[in-house]
Image 1 (cartoon, rainbow over the protein chains, first blue to last red):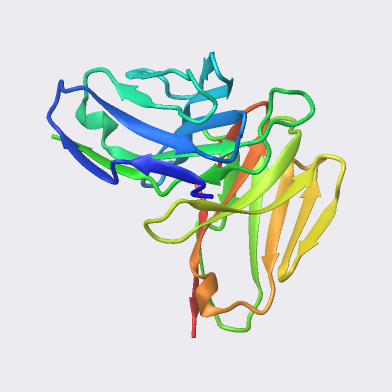
Image 2 (image 1 turned 180 degrees about the vertical axis):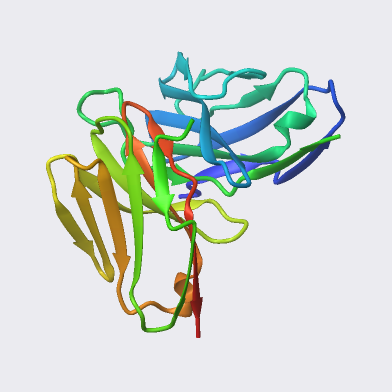
Length: 117
Length: 108
């Protein structure tokens, strides 16, 4: 199993540009999520999904869109990049617990380091 | 804002010593998880403790949970230089919400 894969590893954007960060998992996990990590801020949840066709907002969703058309893929779209979105982005996945709403142990991808100038 | 807060923010010890990190959270949780992050890498899950458990062990790791004080601790015994990393607690309140982490440095 490849686990959770993310592309690209590094990206530099100019303010106002748009782009999509890719995330894929091959573990048949129902739950997928996107986090951003900034120095001194820990990880903050951007968006998450409990299954194909279902997405919801996390703590810091503004400026980002997601979709979940398949179980395997969960792309994150930056609509109009801003310098405040300079960060390291992590995708994670897990199975759901018995409630069908909460993830168990998360498996993380290696991250995408994004710089917006 | 983060629901989990780790303490201390940084910890420096010698190889062979024990390392204790603490985590406090604000709202009721379903479970609490600890993760490790090596510099420049993704997070790796270490251990999960459910809200009805008080203590859990995994190898050199010992986690405790006190729901009345809304706190948890992670103890790493007989630390090694390879344990140098950042450690995060994450509370599941429906979503997984991370604290800011403790940077552990183990000197050989």
